[in-house]
Each structure stands twice: as C-alpha cells, then as structure tokens.
Image 1 (tube, rainbow, N blue to C red):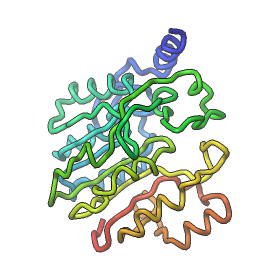
Image 2 (cartoon, one colour):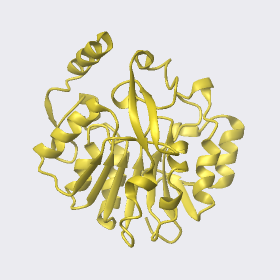
Image 3 (tube, helix red, strand yellow):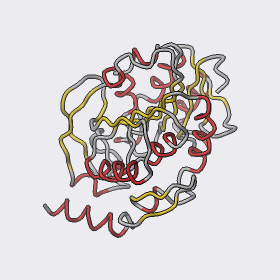
Length: 266
C-alpha cells in the first residue's frame, strides 16, 4: 500500500492532475515534464515530419499517450501498447478529451514470447529489465507489477499489409527482447520505419547494454539504414556502431535512432 500511496503523491507533485497544452496544441494530463514544450522536442519534430507519409502508427511503450494523440490528430490509424495501469489511465483520458479516433489500445507488455512478467517501477521509468536505472530512479526497486506479456507479431497479427507503418519503441532497456518477438513485423511489406531509444552505457545493470550491437544488426541484416533520430541526424553504420561498442560510449549523448528501409526516403 505504501508504494502505491507514494506513487500517487509523486504524480501529484509532478502536476499530473492538471491539464497542459502540448507543443502540438493539444490539452493533455499527466506528469508536467512529459508534456512541457521542451520534452523530446527533436523526437516530436521528427515524428511530425514522418506522419504525413504513414498510414499506421504503432506506439510501443506509449506512456500517457503523447505520441498517440499527435498521430491520431493527423488521421493516422494508431495501435498503442502500454502495460502500466497508471499510464493507461492518463492515456485513456487524453484520447477521450481530445476526441481522437482510430486508436487501438493493447494493455500489455511486449517481449520475445507471450506470458507474464514483472514490471518494476512507475511512470516513464518503469521497465521489465530487472535493476534498470536503480541508481538514477531508486524508487523503481520498491514497486513491482505483474503484467501480461505478448509479442509485437501477435499484437499486429499480420494486419496492415501494404500499409506504410511507423513503429516507435520506448521500453526502458527492453528493446532487444521486443524485437525478438517482432521477426515477422520486421519483414512486413512494405517494411516499417522504426524509431527507438537505445542506450549503450546508461541505466543498464552493470553499466552496459549487452545487446546494443545486436539490436542494430537485426536491422542492418534486413536491409535497413540507421541514423540519429532527429530531423537531420547523421547516418549510423555498422562500423560506427562497432566503434561505439569498442570505445564503450556513444558520443554527443545520442540515444534515439531511426531505422528506415532502403530507398524509403524517410
């Protein structure tokens, strides 16, 4: 009971009960830092740039629904995945209060296979990766939620054939496991464009992501190109990724990347 009460107090202090105007003009509720104009400004600009070329937007780790509302406002079909009940509460309210349509919500986590798993933490810092970011977010170790788990291939189920898809994944250190359950989605035609947060050395237990290079290889092996996820982000090659892994860090704080099919123009 104490962790639940402490979580509620924390959200109140973050101003989650108040409506705020987002950078793209919608009134949303949730922790203030997730809505304020400087939150993920580059990522919001990049996704806004991509959406006119997209039929379906898939948001894995949707949190309070910021990107869900952004995509739905531009007439995209939206499939959203979010396992944490407190986040879903805000997501539902934000979708309803803004009258967004064509939104499908899956209240589950994603991994390499279906089942049950423990989600540690609250809010935007919760993770299925045990001991994720405990030095930075010590509260995570005190709150655990058992959640149903599916895979991205199951959630999408081979639907949207021939549709242009943009898939955003933000699951706090658990990207590789999600991609392991997305082999069919990676091969869809046309191939989706993906935007993901992926850290090499930050927040991971032991100080290093053991699957950083393999995550990039999953895309390179399937004919994707990569670049830093900003409107004019530099290209990222196999050689660059290998160099980052060898030196043990990613320069300039890069942590968000976009993976595009060859000749996609996106």
